[in-house]
Length: 268
Image 1 (cartoon, rainbow, N blue to C red):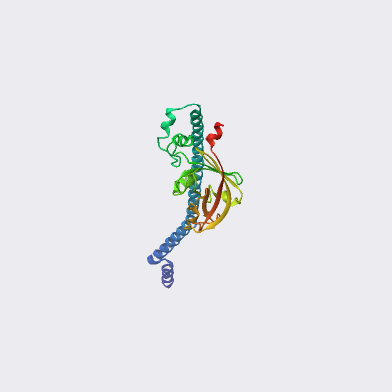
Image 2 (cartoon, rainbow, N blue to C red):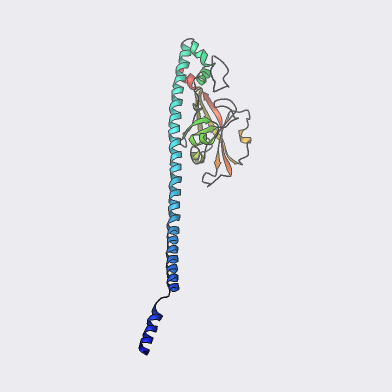
């Protein structure tokens, strides 16, 4: 009897209670949950960074391709208009043309040319809507870009912009052009005094020589004021390698040295 009793007690003492089983199940479930959370945290951060990086690279690629194709399209349309301007000027010299006279009465893009029989005025009248204002070239640093009106986000994303309120391209006074330091005006970091800058418009080609390179505050607009001389002022952000919104402005000032109208040169 004693042996049976002890045997029963022994078997009874080794059997798990329902409460103990529940605790084991809860503990196992908690460990699995924590393991799953740790796994998710371990892999979600790298995956998130990966997708963010891919998205950023994709956007940069889109911006670069958009700027490239936009520049090619602007250059093609500008060259066609320039060729048409030469043809109109040549026809004007060979004889009077009623069509050429009418062109001067259409939408003029260069209000500085007021004479109705001025070949430059006629070439400006050939310009169509959204046609680039011209082309800037700095051979010494390998910079070439088409110029559009304004300094809006999309304009500067696709090329160099003409600063509103400054003189028109080819006109007398201070011509202001702006560009991004990490795209079209990036090569300005290699420019030096004495380098020549060529502006080509439908009214002619104008050469400027750099005589001043300076760094100013963003709100310093004195550099864009008209001093009475024929000046070209290039503006971009500075420092060139700064990450984020650059705190300064990089200024290149050049004075006009020649003004050879492209139309007249082509005819002669």
